[in-house]
Amino acid sequence: MADSTWSDDLQEVKEFEHALVIDHDAKVLASKNVDTSKFAAEIPNLPKLFASRDTAVRAGVDFLGEHYDVHRAYEDLIYGRRGDSATGAGVALCRVKRKSDGNFVYSIAVFKFPVISANAVPRLRDFTTEKVASTL
Image 1: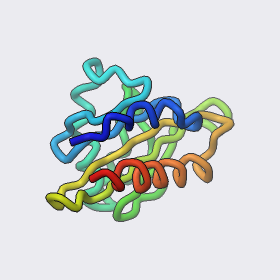
Image 2 (image 1 turned 135 degrees about the vertical axis):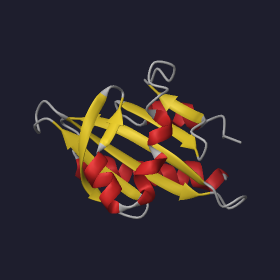
Image 3 (image 1 turned 30 degrees about the horizontal axis):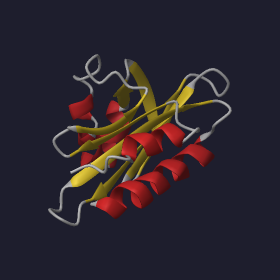
Image 4 (image 1 turned 180 degrees about the horizontal axis):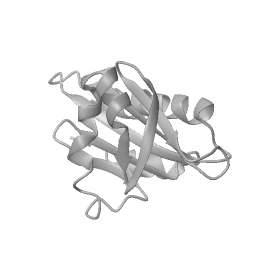
């Protein structure tokens, strides 16, 4: 079960323009500036990107009606961007394993200039491990 403060905590992360936390069944646990009903078809595809590095790089990330090219894909972290550095946007996905049942919980965030990957990716990783994983 989700911690009721995750959505509140997401609202406070200024680096994220949009953010979402979902479980392994793509159930939305928390969100920031995401109309989950409008983009419901995209949400179940997000966990599939962690199948392999090749899958993530080849498919890219489709989120909120935008496509992002993936530049880095690791076991528990994927990130990339669309557009140029000044007018484009970046995206990052992170996953953590629940201790209770071994299933993953996923977080995704979109960030725009002046926020860069070097700031946003660690911030998402920290949020996911400190706020989300600590309550699982």
